[in-house]
Length: 336
Image (spheres, one colour):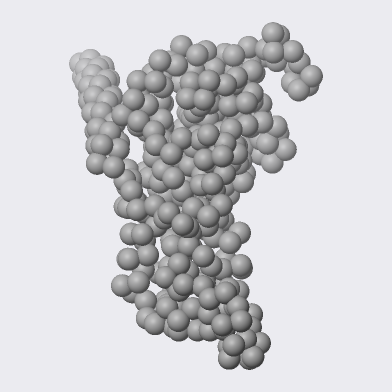
């Protein structure tokens, strides 16, 4: 479902997320609890932890109420692991990193990100079937951002919103302009650049599934061929959609969900991006919690996009055929 660029971007994000966690997990997995020899001989002096409540890989306590996804990931990983009993965790398991990395990521998510989300009131379920219509209702606002010439002064931070056009009022566009001016367009829009801007341009708690649905809906609303490329240069239409319109649409959705103002919604979008990746992963990657309805809505949107693209190609072919026919007729006239 995702383009090669999106797949590269997704892989890069996975690697970046893992880099931040691998050190702690690796240490715990290889050393286990730090105990002196006497502790092993006198466990009754200390509280004994039920091994069934511990992660078999990192020995940390499992969530009290693990999600179905966590349980399914553990079942899958255990099938490819072997026993590795160790002090403090007789049910410990051992396997290559690639086997249990998903367990560790989900474990960290449910231990840290999920409680934060609950505390802050971020949704644990989203009706993704309604997301396309909700994004479509923002068409006029998003279209103004696309068509605006953005002739705001260079010192945009000091400018009043009332003096800015629709595009210049977009914080995502302004930040993007600064990064391009500082690093160059290629550095910003490349895979590494998009990883660096991950939290700033993701759709917040709507996650990867939301990203896919929002992106496909925006493509249907604003086909790349409809863009005036000179007005968004040096960005391509694909870059503009991904880095500006997707987060703009997500901010609108968050404002509706939580009944909050735009500035607060932007903060929520950025704070909840990692939560969204863990809670609503892309169904195309075989998520254990992917709902059949979620997969069907994604499939339907992709099919609609493919249909639109086929019609565009047919139109382009007819135009090329007419141009070729006219060229042949001109050449025939010259010969006569």
